[in-house]
Length: 291
Image (tube, rainbow, N blue to C red; front, side, top):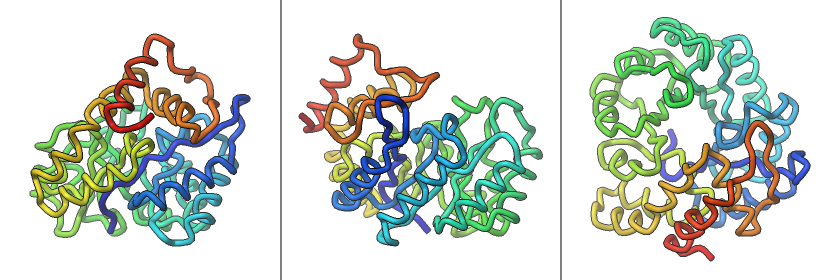
């Protein structure tokens, strides 16, 4: 259903922390011009945990308004409460979203069967195609490949964002899942290898800064052009690394502000990028061709 470079879009904020919808609209138009293949909004990179439900919905609606069906819009609707997740997914569906990205419930550490029942309920009641999102570094709970394969046979569940960085999981999931179930990398540093192993693209933090380069890398990898994909990816290696020198989205929002793309706002408990990391991120930006 989806493929290529799918940006995990930041939520622009003014310095007082208020959501800046005008900056969001400009950012979306830039991504469309640069070749981004899909937009993923109000996810981890979009600071969803600190946005009020009304703010989340305003970001979703503004993104959909600007996009005008030119590329898919995927909305992060996951939480650690199944009822809340269903409600958020229904709201995204009513706003015109194309799919929901639903993270493994965090903090309460569900069992594999609990995860199965959670995602099954969202798929049955939410009104949107569901992309599972496995990121155990943040959620603690790990959606195992065998559970993902089991969920692939639930109506309405169309794919998984696998963010462990373990490329072997791509093959493990695809080998056990139903035909047509798609895997998307959630780790920029290993995205190229994941696509060459069968993933259909990446939900990317790096694409916030270099959308055209990430689009070219994904297109080459999807075409099986190993050398071209490696050539496009090499200058981005520093960004893949340094955009996580502090917790995402701290570094990427700082970098976008440096580029003049967004204001410098970020919400507590996240804080602006520590000055000690500025040279590292700037160096990675220069290596990727940014000034």
